[in-house]
Image (cartoon, rainbow, N blue to C red; front, top):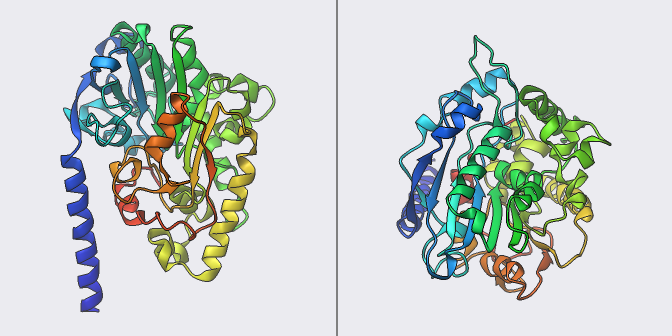
Length: 399
């Protein structure tokens, strides 16, 4: 027992040391509070103004803009939204003055060779709806504001005024709930920018799929139904989807991605850890060890995880094979790969076709070469191995 505890303690401390080392290599971006948004009703759950962190571009990147949407799950009723209201996921008053920029946001050419000198922004997530909500009324008891769509508009307006209106290159990206945001708002983002600009979208861990959990329940579909109802999201979801399907289905990219006209790159695990934990096996106590460390899964559990992979691959078929659609789908058990330096570009980063994510994305964006790679089933890829880091950084909320 004591030796087991010692091993766990050593593993945890090695991970913490690694994260501290990587954070030291990241730059820090100051926060910008968008005070002008309040008059437009574009506010966080608690009524505070929205915010973003910004590092200005320079040199060849002076007219290039990368707008990265923060992730952090969703709140689906008054209780869960109230729980977020007093955290950074519901109030800009709880956000720090600076934020570490790593991975795709890193300002170090060694670790982010193609985007390091761009204007790099991380839009903070404080609405709980992937920036789709818009309810005018404010409950006098909860004082919750559901205004995610207004936040998106207000922040973009602020960035356009700061020079994004002159962009020659632009990307909207995001991780998790932010990765879904980058898909839901992809064409809208493109429409804001000059016609001659090169504009593309990147979704990291944002391709949530509609499957039943292992008990046979439609847990995730019911959850998104509550998100849409609570936040009044329907009018801000893709009309090409809501005109044909129930609005909650339009939170699943498989039902609307084929209608997006702007080029998109998808970075995703085929066995995304958040989806395994929250979509496939919610509230299943016997999966606890497996969900925390895939190496502790039983053969039966691994078969069920790879069964999820099969469903995921079916769900991505609407993406198609067009060169405008890039794809880096690996079988690493993680969630979000573009924000973490050790996954984006570092010694030991995950590879597909001997290529790290950073190079695959950049080659696709600059039209140097297309990239459309789907990994083999777990545990075939020897470059995977960051599941412990992923578990410690998990921001998304359990369903």
